[in-house]
Image 1 (cartoon, rainbow, N blue to C red):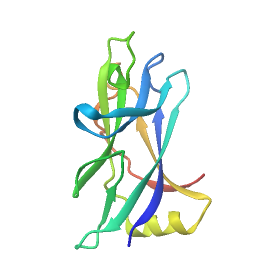
Image 2 (cartoon, helix red, strand yellow):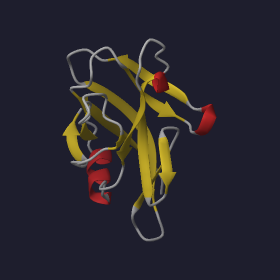
Image 3 (tube, rainbow, N blue to C red):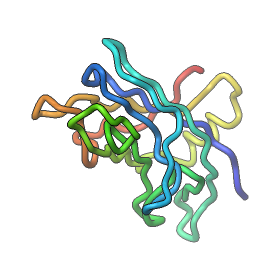
Amino acid sequence: MKQELTLRIILETPLVDVDFALQKGSGTGYHTIQKQRSTARDLSFECTVTVKNRLDGQPDFAGVVVQGTPSNRFIYIDIGASAGQLDTVWRRRLKVPLRGITTEMIDESVSNPSSILETKVPGTGRDGGPACGTVKPFMGWYVATK
């Protein structure tokens, strides 16, 4: 059975004056959505994904922002020029894994209208620029209040 699930990604302390956006689609035909220019505050992105159970019982995610193979799904946050910003030296993407979201977490979030699945990821990398690549260390997803 397919279910709709809302996810929130909080990008903590991103580099100031850089555009960040969710990536919709893949390949050369992708678009950015929810573009935001960073200030001194965390950025927040919300999206809806579809979830169903794979044959092995594990959740599988689909939707316009979902990337990757069934066993390795993720969401891209486009950064700088990748998000359409023309006046920047940054061209990066941050891969936010969907691993660790359990059926129990999904059921709790879907059954309670005031709940949402949330994760927090670093906005600045070790090099002082915007964080990019796969989020490491990834602290995982949790049920939060909307």
